[in-house]
Image (cartoon, rainbow, N blue to C red):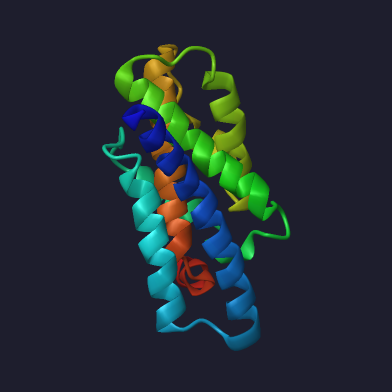
Length: 168
């Protein structure tokens, strides 16, 4: 029962994050971004990330992803629904849990499709970051895809389009 309860709690974290991000996107559109909204977003992004720790980070991953992100996480709901995002975030937690206990089976291709979907709505072309997950070992590939999703969501939660202008 504890295993099931824990699993259910983890699944709700992705859904909760998607709801918070969607609500925050509306508040930001109506009232502008405030410190309170930023803090709420970070609280839930941090909670989601904590469910995935530790990740298989590769040196340079954050820099490459940071240079490719084109949308803040609250500006993606014209490209992905709140429910789809929540499903993807929960699926990533589920795959990570299975990897951690050694029961991952056939979800690697689905993981890649779902991670690519999130990356695409953030403006990242998966081919630009393929060097980080181009492994034949399924477990290593899955762990890297999870790391890419985690780093991308983290960066997109604090991303500012002024950064892009400053980098050019």
